[in-house]
Every structure is written in structure tokens, then in C-alpha cells.
Amino acid sequence: MIISNRMKNLHPYVPGEQPKDRVYIKLNANENPYAPSPKVQETVIDFVKNHPEKMGVYPDPDSNELHAAIAEMINKTGGVLCRAQVSSDGSVTPSPQDKIPFTVTPDMIYSGNGSDEVLSFVFYAFFDSSTKFVMPEFTYSFYPVYAGFYNIPMDTIPLKSDWSLDTETMLAHSAENKGGIIFANPNAPTGIGLTRNQVREMLEKASPQEIFIVDEAYVDFGGESCIPLLQDFKNLVVVRTFSKSLCGAGQRLGYIVANPELVNYVTTVKNSVNHFPIDALAQVSGTAACKDPAYYVDCSKKVVEEREKFYNFLQANGFYVLKSETNFLFATKEGLPGEELYRKVKEKGLLIRHFNTPGIENFVRITIGSPEQMSELKKAFEQIIAEL
Ligand SMILES: *Cc1c(COP(=O)(O)O)cnc(C)c1O
Image (tube, rainbow, N blue to C red):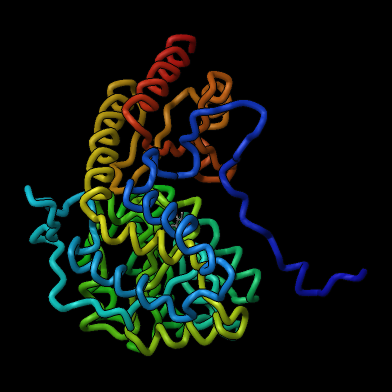
């Protein structure tokens, strides 16, 4: 064969479907139902219209403005949008629970082409083919893909019976492997998070030689951010994205917050693959987004409100639903297999996510959309249940 042996280890991620045959209400990829802030729209139009010459030159290789804007947004929001407070003059402050006890600085940020790419470089920088890394059995299904890509052995730890992370076993294995730990917090597809104190306890028990990668893709919808722990733990990398709470999945922008030394390692990986960062347009639109946190605080609060309503609806209709700190719900109903529910919902013009993975195959994952979208989904569910 003409392909490399390496190729045989590749098992690419299968994204939530994006069908072209019919216009569906998409509640299957945890995208945000709201468009980016009007300020982002204005900035992008201004950039293309009034500074077209900037499309012809290489972008700032260090994304300085963007990193400054990301750091500032985190300081203003405490890293959890749905709890941040917006005062009448539009200024944003963290809720007391989320206040960061130091100032996040731009040298603590690395950004890339979606957190998927960022995660890939993080895997390359911190995990090795000679040592196993620990991850939960059910978590973001891209982690095993990177493991195959970089040939890094995995040590998969089952969840506890309440679907939360088994932190004790994860720690014990990590201590033995000396490789490190990755998990999403809140976790996906369960929606359940660890508190910051729980993560702190893990870090206190672990050796400073073990790297902790905490993927906070969903934390803005109600989890607790681990950014405040960066003060005490130099072996922590927090990964975040614009795709969910910043309404930016189409623009592909993700980042890490970590000690500058770790940021430099990830930058070195990136510079060994592609010496330019995200494109100029993503830099300006990302910067504009960070400068309008009040808009995204509002979007996040709306999503959380809809989530709680749909949670109650599912419970009232006999579903077993996990309590979520994210923009999705993970639910199952006896007598209604996940695959069947997914298919019937699709026939009615809506997409939700079903995973054909043993152990969670009876569940569906429902992204929280706008009130209008959720009301359509509710109607579909009601009809399906009535026909059972
Ligand atoms: C959506 C998601 C990502 C990927 O985000 P992108 O920035 O769009 O690449 C990463 N981690 C988790 C847990 C996610 O759910």
C-alpha cells in the first residue's frame, strides 16, 4: 500500500451530522442558537470593507490583540458567563463565586484554530507514546482520536454509577502511569461537572509532574472554572473555546489558559507545524467578541433558562435526565431506545445526537436552542411519547 503505517492508527472523529437534504432544526452539535454579537458583525464588515489590504498580508503571528482581549474578558467574567453580572452601564463583573484571585495576563493565553486543534497540540506537547494518560470512559470522543493520531496509550476509567467522574481511581492510575489526566469539566456528553474544590483536591494529591488538562468547553453555562487554580498549580492547562458560549463555532477559535511556560511549549508545537496562527479575520472577530461580554452573558443566561425548562419537561414525561451545567441535556427513557427517539425526532425535522456507544446507547444528547426551537422539540417529543 502507498499509505504509511501510521495511517492505520487513525480513527477520525465523527461530528454531529450536518445534512444538506433538508433544513433541520439543529440541536445535535452543541452550537449556540444565537449569532455573534452585533459588534462582531460590524467589526468583520469594517475589516473587509475598509482594510482589505490586511487580507493580503500575514496576520500577527502572536495574536497579541486577541490574547489581550481574551485575558480581559476572563478577568471581567470570572470565566463563567452565565453567572457574571451586567450592571446598568453595561459593565460586567464576575459573580463572587467566580472571582479570580489574580489577573489573567496575555502571556497565559495560546489560541488556535478551534479548541480541537489546540487540544491536538496540547496532546503532542504533554502526553507521550511511552506513558499512558488517564481519561474518563465517557467524555469528549475526540481525545481517543488524538491518542491514535499521536500513538499515545490511553487509560480509560469508568464513570461512577451516578455518571460523575471517579476522581479517586483516575488519580491512582495517573500516579502509577506518570502520564497525566484529561477530562472535560463539565463533562460531555453527561453535562455533569466537578466543583473547583474537587479539582483542587485532585491537584493537591497528584504529583506536580502529572499534567492536568481540563477542557472547559461548556463551563460558561454553569460549571466552575479551574482558572483560579492556575495560581497554585503550574501543571494545569485549561482549554476553552469560542464555539459554544461565544456563538462562534463557524469561525474556529479555541484557546488555553495556563502558566506562560506551558503556553510556550504549545506555541513551539504549533510553530513546528504552521508558523502562523489563526487567520486575520478570526483574530479581529474574536477580539471584538471578547470586548462585548455583556452580550454573551445574556445569551448564556437565556440558554440556561431554556435548559432548566426542558429539564423539567423531560422529567415530567418520565425521562431520566442528568442535571446539566452545560448547553445540552443527556437523557433516556425506558421503552424508548435512544436510536429510535433520535430517528423519530429527525422525521419531524429536528436533529438531536445519539451515540452508538455501548453503555450510553439508550441516551440522547439534546443541545439547548432558542425558545422557539425548544418549543418545536417539545411538540415533537410529546407526539412521539403519545404514540408509544
Ligand atoms: C465542542 C467541544 C470542543 C471543540 O471545540 P472547537 O473549538 O469547536 O474545536 C472541545 N471540547 C469539548 C468537550 C467540546 O464539546
